[in-house]
Length: 269
Length: 291
Image (cartoon, rainbow over all chains, first blue to last red; front, side, top):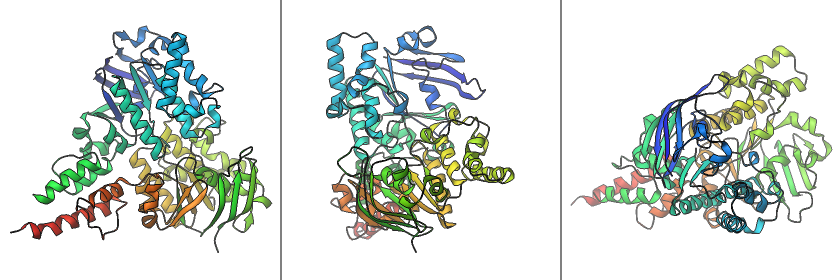
């Protein structure tokens, strides 16, 4: 499902102008990372996708729905949103209940809910924790519960707000494989992240925000090598990209493998 | 004499069978900057809570062994005395922010107010620390209107302002942008140089390598490795146990069988080390390439 954002401006009630004329088109099935410094407007932008915020000016279309004309409950059929802090979205007594809450509210038939819950438990490796209280789990696993509860809603669009925050290496790898699976299923995935290395290794398109505007928008390779513009929004290029730049490699590299291939060519040149 | 002393510390959370910490021996010198790494569940936060006195004074459960800061044992102390010596910056700033204050300035002043510091001194110290942590421009905003990374700075400022002897930080930059992370690490390093003892649980290996004096790797509640950052962060055992390692280390490891990294050279953790190593390889190559 497409997302069309047209000249979106948003001012918070306290007067802070958080978005200044953002226009974006995101096609069905795209995997998009949004990066930029704290306060750049990333979270404000994605909160417009499910109607949590409504434009001060401009408009946001989710498929053919203008978010100003649909309730948050209705938009939840199309856009699933995983909050930055899992504690803001978890409230039931068991992991399985938490995960079933979304699809139940969307009015899916019982069998479909069961299938979706099992699938979400499986993708997040939570099967053995299904009967536990989410608050008895470590923050890492609580994050997985938050992710699972959105996966189970089976929406065409999913938004992750800083999914890797505070996660260890194993958990980051699990998130990467979930995102890859969503892509195989044709979902549109938007992810806000400060983990620029995670971004380089898992996303095709990268949008860089700064001061409420889009500073850069393109493929990971096009965007992540632009050290100076990234610095404007407090972002360093990924570790591997920086290494390539420092060694004077002519192409932008995003992963260790890409770096080694390029470096090998350089050595034998 | 070490300022922090843990001897054979074992701790069980209430109603649990497996200890969250097991026979931990640890001594930390005044002004030392110690980083604690480990997977989620390894005991990093529990160790932070133990140093900060939340264990045994807030979390119940069973604490065995000796926990001593500045010559006083935790068991013989109470939490209100302990927090004047040891400050804890929480992993999730949302859990730390009081909820009782309307502005960032007041939030940062909260601890000093509660300890009866005179008003002019509170104002001076809060202004100083807001500058130091780069949030002076947020002084009049509500702590709840801030982004995650900004809230983490407020959480840090609220503790720094108390001038604890020992500063304990549980992943204090997890929600920060990379340049914010660097600024915070620099501020903390500066504190350590001024004599504050720093213990920080952290996943960001590249930063640890550049800023910490010592690294402790926790595994299932025990100390797996301990030593200079470079030595610990490139240890094979971290990989075996599934710890995250710096991408520079990973890349150099992959480069050795392809003859792109000289095997006798130590593995890199930081960008500078990686640049130096790969440059050396490039230059060693040049003469051979000539006919």
